[in-house]
Length: 187
Image 1 (cartoon, one colour):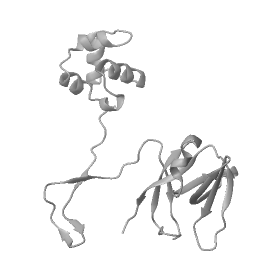
Image 2: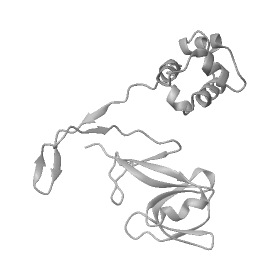
Image 3: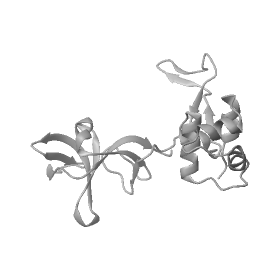
Image 4: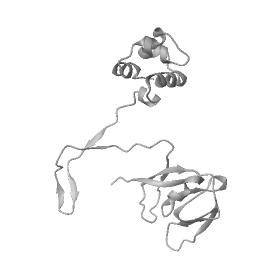
């Protein structure tokens, strides 16, 4: 694992000994140095201990593969395409922690074959946030229903599956559901 422990430590103006002393339990400067240089394997436990000592999240200490941001070449508005007034970048899509995906194999409703629907996984306490949104509802035996959440009452979800003539389905509150939050479509 490639870490950025040294970069973060230096940016905070701390010595190896100071970081070691801030760890719980405290450790030596040599151990911190070995973890920084990769001569000692950085476990998740060590990553969390050092992150706490540096007052950052563990994710801030891990060097992730380069993520490419896309330069904005034009802005499409009511008047057509125009150059941006200042340099802008659009981050490439990356899934958030806990997201799940639905792959569209055949066009259905507003979705086309080849689309990816990225869903935020919600617990029952958050189901209200999904009202009038497309959701993936788990069923027994590895089956699912995908449709619009049109109501929630007395612990039951009312879902209208996509497609013409589909009938509303009622579900007792499932353990989770996936709320569609991002559409990835290749042209």
